[in-house]
Amino acid sequence: MQKKPKRLRAFLQSAGLAFFLLAAPMTLAGCGHKEAAAPESIPVTVQSVAMASGATGGAYSANIIADTQVDVAFKVNGYVQSILQVKGADGKARNVQAGDRVTAGTVLAVVKDDTYRNSLVKAQADLQNSQASLSRTKADFIRYTHLLEQRVVAQADYDAAKQQYESARASVGAAQAAVQQAKVDLDDCKLKSPMSALVLDRKIEVGTLVAPNTIGFQIGDTSKVKVVFGVPGAIVGELKPGAEIAATIDAFPGQNFKGAISKVAAVADPNARLFDIEATIPNPDGRLRVGMIAAIHLPATVQAKNVLVVPTRAIVRPPDDPKGYAVYVAEKNSDGQMIATLKKVEIGPVVGDQASVESGLDAGAQVIVRGADIVFNGASINVVP
Image (cartoon, rainbow, N blue to C red; front, side, top):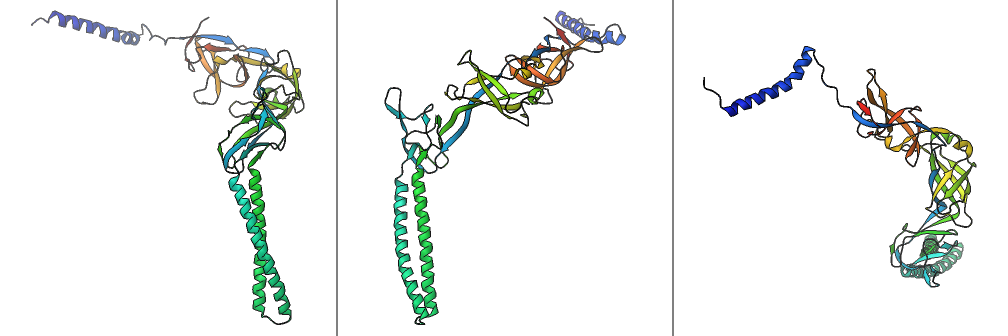
């Protein structure tokens, strides 16, 4: 038999070795000498679920908004001809802008009114013609009434005179309505403030083309301001309208602003699962401005509650519920091996890097913090420092 070349022998030997290495685990396992290797454990770090004093472990964050906010919109079409002038810090006149105060009835802007003024002139001329026609047909109707009584004219002639008189009266009524509407349209060229308030925003400039319902200004009453924040269901039952709250503002360090709860939501937000609480804070000096961030402190009787908190980075979305929340907990299975177990939870307010947990966890549970985004339910894990 012809000998195989050296290169071919080397290839077959290496191939045979590779096949042996692949087949060996199967052969050994089949013979009962050694089991297949367990899947590699995922290294994770854990943290015990702790109790935090306070409904959220801190204050509630909320935006300050005006007590009453109104969008002032135009009622007619046209180009903005002028905007209310006020004295600026340099003593020179300028357009009114956000931060300026206006009184009720102040004309904020004027739309070019040539078309509406001409419409009023025409409507007034039409009214004069209608009134002249009414005077003439009225005289004819009175004359035909007397002639009919004397049996001098036919009933048909009387009826025609009466119809012309009634038609003229209707025409006068329509002309009067047209004049009134033309006056309203002309007056609507002036955009007026409906109340004494602070200008929150100006959305127009001179020359802007506007239409009915185009918003020119946003104004608000800031003699009182509102704050809206969400609380978990665990404490919403203890908050009632009239209950006092305190607010702190970064712009005024060391100062507390007192207020009272004015509204408690009856239904939780379906996504955040929190109940909106609205509180009103007096602001007579106007120091609190719309858009500032307030830290709301609830009454001590509510803040004294203890709730579970977990790091926000431990919170994940359940695979079967993209709108829900869950955490992975490190537990031992029946074989004593550490695995990751998915626990669905309901979370409350988030403060800093901590989130309150309303349900789904027990104190002392070991939640996976680092590695929560790569483990899965039932995954083998290795807890590391």
